[in-house]
Image (cartoon, rainbow, N blue to C red; front, side):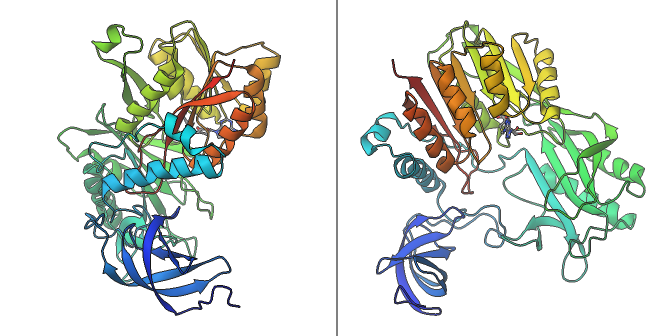
Length: 482
Ligand code: SAH
């Protein structure tokens, strides 16, 4: 059926006005919306329609008629095939403008907030000084190319074909040598790679995590079996590597024998070194708040990180994000703070430095163990952690323990907060709420509920954690209307 007047294989010329959630260009032909892969905002393209739906369709670029002024030549040769950097062909500054606009649009469209209100509270996105080599964590699939050669690399977008590339520009330079070392160990000891199609073969992924401040590196091989042949040889190969500023401190395997897309197995077995790596984050004062000695002397919080725990992937931007969270919370030293979705206690411990008491809540028991250990490690005694769902633990803290927080911080996964959680937050009547979000759509949905419950948005700022990708991180400050 043709609703739009267009059909498959038609050729259209369109101006690209926006970018979709997966990085595809969006343009309109006579009002009919088309999603066009590999087109950049500002391009005029000739495209062939590949699929026609009722309200929108998909097309493929035939020719860029007039290239966008925001087009740049991508640094990575694989960016079009790789599923990682969807918008690398767009100038970084323009990526930032797009992300900021995306937050604004979501707040208006889904949140129902007026443009003037948003403009009054929205601050400029905090971009990266250097949008390359920023990631501290990478998981490389191991497999075979068409000729049967052993390779490490990345999944091609939307598929599980592996593109051989050990030199991803988003991660640290050492990753390449580590991967080459793993591959050479595998070749020398005839270790097979996992084949997803048959479920046979041994090595599935290599996880590499790096402490940007500590210089510690953790390597974990995810395997489809109990052990690797010649595990000592792997250790020997890896520990021989020498880097100028970093060193490997932990080598482990994770057993994952399931046929699943989940990368890591549930258990970790240490082969060499420490079970954890450590890194630290700087507590910065971004504005005049709390002018203590911290403004002069550098204050850092140390975190232990296990292969399975969540830790933000962009440490430099995370410092900015957490310090903004601290600033938005406006702590004077006396406040009670609840940090929901606290992971290994990162934001909680930042808050604990400036608050009277902090309660952290997180669903993963291992992460809470890490959070408690992190508190001890940093001699922080005013933080308490609870395992469980935020939407179940928060009502208990409220009703059973009678806790009345001055500030509630939330940092939920992409699906946002549970409604029960939002209702309880409103019932607890904290003076301020700080919402850290990795999905502007669910953020807007939840802010609508909070603002319907007596809160108003005071500040909004996107902080770019994921340059060259479509992911958007945002932080919002709300206060209770008296
Ligand atoms: N604030 C932390 C972690 C943020 S990621 C940091 O910045 O490092 C979101 C966290 O929410 C994850 O650790 C995840 O395990 C946790 N989580 C997911 N659903 C949850 C729920 N219903 N209740 C509590 N925690 C949850």
